[in-house]
Image (tube, rainbow, N blue to C red; front, side, top):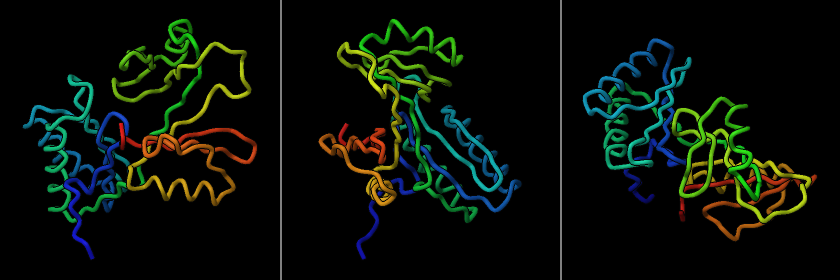
Length: 209
């Protein structure tokens, strides 16, 4: 058996951040873990998003000032994993995904203010593409550039961001459930799939970007 050389096996590299899910025994154990993570983040002066639920603690590491993942995130991720291991708490990165709603448009600037007001989130520029984001990192809606055209039957589609290690299993499961592969031309960045009625969705990863 080959040795696992992944420096951050507990973490899933998803869109705009490193994500982790730690499986805790109960709510009290989760609260104690969140407290330990918060203290470590405070000491590093690099704050993170922590979500406590019964049985799980979800973590998002993202450098807002740099607009992406930096060495600070990698160092803090490694330290969080150590803290969890010291408490015999395991991670489940394969359970994590990020779903974005995408809208095809030839003029995002024209309609972005409407969606920003409707969703109560901010318009942000991401390398020339407009997105409506909450909390600075999570895209509620992003606008995919298209040529001007008549309104098609499907303008919205889902982008499902998964850990690159999980992409093949997720695709195979969708195909086994009756879906079909429309295109893998841009893999491993994304694969285009469709259901039996022709509705499209994409499985996306950070690989190859």
